[in-house]
Image (cartoon, rainbow, N blue to C red; front, side):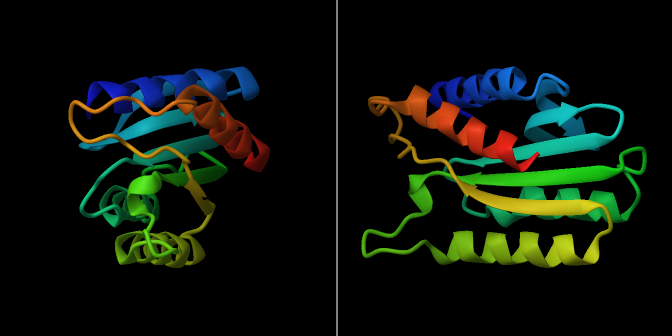
Length: 155
C-alpha cells in the first residue's frame, strides 16, 4: 500500500472512530494471514472495511473473510459487517464499473447470503488514485470523511 492509500486508510479509521466510538478501530487487522485495511470491533460486532485501491483481483480478500467466517473464525461476534470500498479506479470512462468490481460485488453478495451473521456492503470511495508519484486529488479528505459517514450509517 502506498503512502497516499495509507493516508486514506488512516483517515478512514479515525473518521469511523469519531462516528462510531462504540467500536475499537484498527488498521491492518490480521485475520489468519490476511490483513484487513480497517476493522472495528466490540463485544457483539466486527466491522471489516476493505479498501480496493487498484487491485487486480478485488474479490480475493473479501472472499477470504467470508471463507473464514464460514469456518467459524468470527464465532464470538453476533454480527460481522464487511464493507468493500471501490475507488474510481474501477469506474469505466464509458460509464458503469469494471467487470473486476462487478465480480467482486457478486462474490460478496453471494457469500453474504450463504454465511450466517455476515452482511456485505459494496460502497464507492469517490477518489481516483493517482499513479505512482502523482498528485493527491483535491478534496480527498472530505470524500474519505463522507465515505466514513456512509459506513457509519449502515452500522
